[in-house]
Length: 401
Ligand SMILES: *Cc1c(COP(=O)(O)O)cnc(C)c1O
Image (cartoon, rainbow, N blue to C red):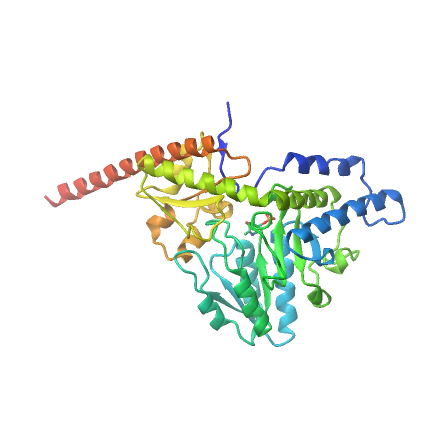
């Protein structure tokens, strides 16, 4: 049996073959402890890690010394947000500004900081999914410790205006963090230009391995941040533990590859997105796009089909295409997406939302096929739910007689 077509590239991406090839020697051949600098085994691993660190830094316009390897974006968010909040509290700043559309790996960290006495406030988000700059501008003041706004949303793909937010923060002396897990390797990022102080990355969202990510920490902040994990003093004392050389090499190779292919990939995905939406309409599907199409990563489409429950649709197509309703974590919990609710949508639109993710390897044929499968299944499900409603009305009609 052939597997269904994979269209869930926001949940994770496959490791690129070239990236995998670069990683393999570091499992059993070049296996030295990168922190054992007295012999050749350790030195060889350390050299590979230094190159990887430089490649990650280059992807976001940072210096090598500003990159700390972590287990992923979740750990990077925890390290950066918690340490920055406590550092700023020591300076009398206890307000944290964010948005309700953030990933759980930010929201839950802020919930914990809230319990510890920080004042967490949420900037307005429009129905297009973009943070209101005017509102954020009012919320960031001399009491603000930090602002955390993601670069690209994992559910709806919209791209926030990081540079404008960064400069508001810089002007008021607040720290600016961005969870760039869905943006790194996909859109150009420049921590200098956007005045970003802290940033979180995850390799498995851009064709690198799972279990490795990076925290960018602007040089001037490194002295003052406290680690979450104490131990042997690795990573400038900010994150102890022996570095996993193959994974570090993996995120480095994925970064170099992404930097080289980013522009072409975006053009390819824009073509796919356009073709997919056209085919859906041509097939008679009735749907709405969630989040603006104007500032969006083209590999992400989030759609609500009229009169269709997302769970039912995802199940109906699951033997042919692999897509998700909402984000992976909320899908497990089977609760409506907090992102779509933050956009102000009602139950029908929120419960009808499916996320379709295109990737580097996705072809035009595949998206056309997927559009036909989705359109036909959605139309079929909408008819069933309409006739069910009609029957309900019939029952009530009979009862009244
Ligand atoms: C995937 C993702 C994370 C979590 O990253 P891990 O490396 O899997 O911990 C955090 N934030 C966003 C926006 C993501 O898409």
